[in-house]
Length: 186
Image 1 (tube, rainbow, N blue to C red):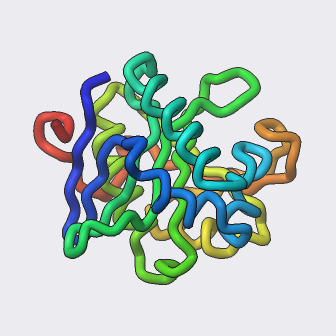
Image 2 (cartoon, rainbow, N blue to C red):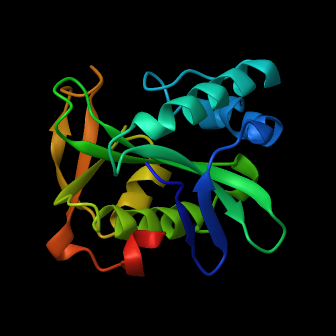
Image 3 (tube, rainbow, N blue to C red):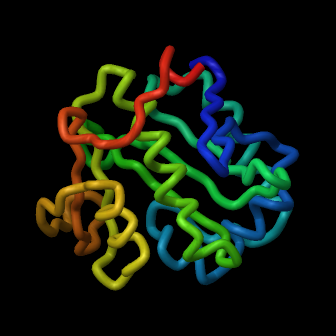
């Protein structure tokens, strides 16, 4: 897949780099962020482990079928990494595509997850995808609120995906109210 670069009013959404390891560790190594990632991803324990994770993400990126992938969210005003975004196939059947967002705890409540995810959804809907899901534990009020802000419809609860009771949200291309970038965001 060609490198992705999307811009919003405040963010640049770009491919991860191994050079992001230290900043990414402040997100994926933070217990307050990581508690919501398990079992999809475990807390990263040190900067070297984060570097290894990023190496794997960078190496696998060209082999992923669009729109799946993982991207960094960088604040445009100061080039600070504020979070990450992903579009992944949901287990166990790998038919449904899930959008995920992770934001640095120091940046919570500033709307970066919604802004970045809205741009990524707009791009994803240029890639022959009809619907995208988000799943969250009901106790993860921030994730549930973000899904709703994105215009995602609550479709129920399930233990199908990760063996946890999760709230499931969905947005269809026909119902998506966000911007769709010209030329597929490239």
